[in-house]
Length: 262
Image (cartoon, rainbow, N blue to C red):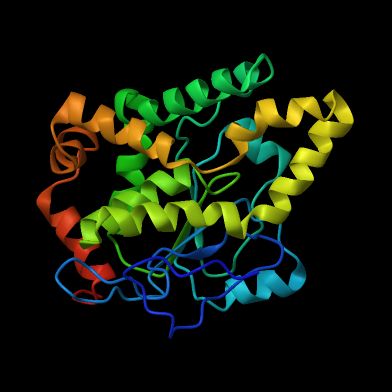
């Protein structure tokens, strides 16, 4: 099932889908509209969950002509499922703090899972390691496309970077949130497999406890946004003072996504 096109998007552009990386997509969607009526340029930045690719999908990714594949995962995540080599693309790794799996294993209630996810998103703003990683990723992306960035599920670390890119490009918050939530539709099959594993190992009742860790929820995005306002005042200051991005980097990212730079 193809997810609905979020508000502010054009449905006229074909979107590349990968069967073996179901949360792979173009950051620009089908060409999201900006607040001033422009349309984002597709084919510049791509986002994904981990790249456990079939041969066919590997060929499709290679056909994108990627310059860089950026991995946001930890050492343990990478060791479990290393990225395949993509000819012509430089592999880079910037470890952003993801979901602490040792805390997930101790979850006893759905409310605790929601609270954990809110803490994860707040850490994108408050933790130096995450800020350093996100700043480095955005700085690299400013070199120009096409580039791909990903984490494990492609929803939290990857979702935050994508949300920042769309904001920089001038996309409004309702569209950013709708795009963020597309993970729940695109990655439904892989989430169902994880839920089945949880049910087999811990019982069906455990699925409801762990489900908040497996989905995208605007409540999490709002936790990060609230932390931005508390710590920096607004996203422009977070980008500048928190992530260390100067005006030239932000301007370059904006121009790339709006088709004003190459």
